[in-house]
Image (cartoon, rainbow, N blue to C red; front, side, top):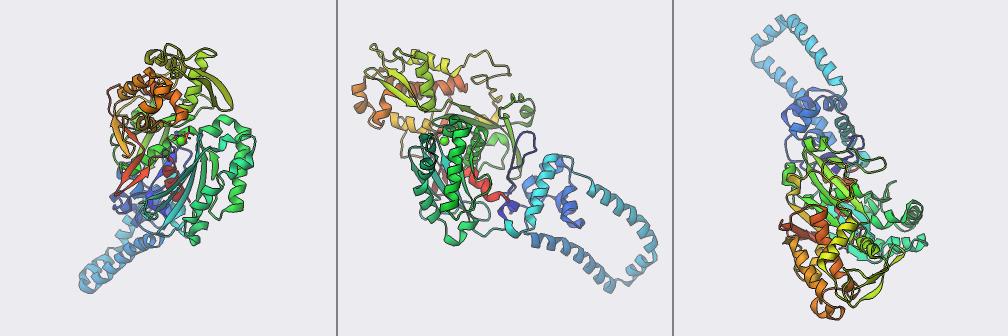
Length: 559
Ligand SMILES: O=c1[nH]cnc2c1ncn2[C@@H]1O[C@H](COP(=O)(O)OP(=O)(O)O)[C@@H](O)[C@H]1O
Ligand SMILES: [Ca+2]
């Protein structure tokens, strides 16, 4: 039995036509009654699972209903058992109640007359095509998995996921059991290694770019038992760095990475294993990661948490919304990703609002903010610094004003760079840059905010870097910004000992930008409690709060 057939976990694009994976995270639940009935009364898989209507399936919990809880053998066995059971009952009845048998014999003509139309009607109903495309797709997939064969996996399933981020490359190795629970690898629940710079630091040398992954690949592969390597999927997902390089340059790098995998690895490489992730994919994976680790998948959408992931090149926001709100989502402009993705996770259908803002990651935003001041001093740069900031192969003047940096002025520049008050907002309500804000709601009330938000807060000293999470309010970023913006360069080291020297001139900018992004950009209240997250506790372990886990779950659930 494959994990995919158990787990009921599916990714859809909003038009429901693009199924990416399926799994059922809860194999212990009983199938719902309506499905049990159809499962035992029909003869073939195809007929059997096409019969329930879409709404029946959704009500009863897709995961358990569709994938069933049985291996292909045990499931078909169960079907046979019920028929056999019926025969056995009849045989026993013959022995004990002769008169009943006589009665049946006497009325056999009538019984036949009644049963023929019932059988015919049942057959017609069962053979009718499914009413919803998405449900049909899921059934097909589930049934393919039921065949076992190449999809069948062992009790331990590894996945190796590379996060080719804009500021560095990382690898995560996970091991799942049959229930899609994480199993420890040594002392931790994952192997996590990272290095800098990222693939995009070598735009003109694809081979060197690819070779930067060699050490990570070697260690990751060594952590997978030798006999499982050819069955273990490896994926390399590049994010904002390669997105910003443009198609040709990034494709050359990806091709070099594909060759590297072919030459140096025995891991299982699917056709789409090495790609630039689109931003909504990255945001969805991040949402799955956090909600999986918090064990909120399968609960009503308003019990799930929303996520923000502030990378170097892009920032993602994702949270579950109601079906009604999803129906009113603005249609994406041509060439843009749609705002809503549909997913089946642990027996529940989610409508996920997700958007990625390219060029609004922390390191990219510095460039946007410095662009505004051009050749003059910038109110976000710590006074006493006069230099240049390099980003994406370009240089930007970064000079503090002699009168000092200013939180208010810096915020005005940041609001400007974010295009918060941009008139291009044609949707009901926008976040910034003309992007729909998703409408808010229960799935956004609890926000888990990751990556640079956690790092800068820890460096600025208002959260404990030794803790995996910290509850804060956006206004704490503003408070820290006031201190950073009022200092002089030479005071930096003593006032903010945790901040790396290269980041000191930009500490005021970074903190103001983070506050502006949360409050003016995403519309959070300055006093709203949010959870800054580096890792999420999972049992006695803590796991990195990063998108690769979502991708791994999909990878081990795929055929
Ligand atoms: O696995 C992770 N665990 C914790 N933080 C991470 C992880 N991966 C990325 N980050 C955070 O994201 C920041 C950089 O983002 P990245 O280089 O991935 O940019 P991008 O997402 O815009 O491509 C890192 O400095 C770090 O704070
Ligand atoms: Ca990232």
